[in-house]
Length: 222
Image (cartoon, rainbow, N blue to C red; front, side, top):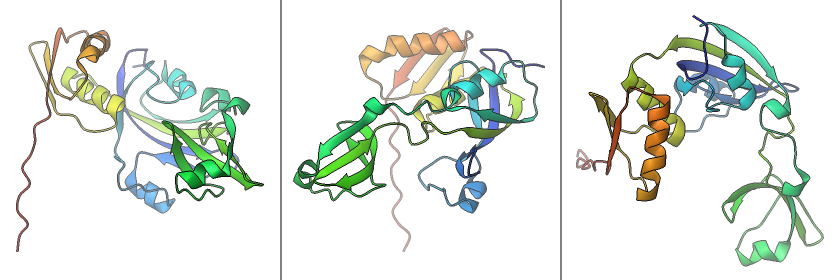
């Protein structure tokens, strides 16, 4: 059965930089370790996504429409993946600004300035150039993606959607059209988030939120 926009599917993928064949993203932990990009804080497993909701890069999302359950190799230009380099996102800052914050900048240093993630490109003459573009902006990439299966159970769709949005496991349940989600969310966001869930999973008619349960830590064994 060919995929269409709004379908939920389970996928695995490997993302590589086209020119160097360097792996930058993968759903499999062992492959991440082999290519020295393993992050112990990351979740490595097959991903559940909703086609057409840009839960993967735009070009890959568009590619999935009308595809079958199999493996594909998908080359993407910068415009289809992480965007072109934007000169406006290159900022020249005084070195004194970093010293004031007790930061010793050097090329390649990743930092967070006023909520924006950037990479130090050069340090010279008392000036520092920080690049706030996506690290892969301007790069041609290639994805090897395996479409494993269609997701048909609404509760599994909900779990996949929550993970895609928040990048962590969130406890939830679904019974008789009512979704119950353990999620600390600002009150003003409840309506917008509820409408988003109901649009993607029409079988859900009502959504309620509760504070995540606190699990008591067991005493360490002696």
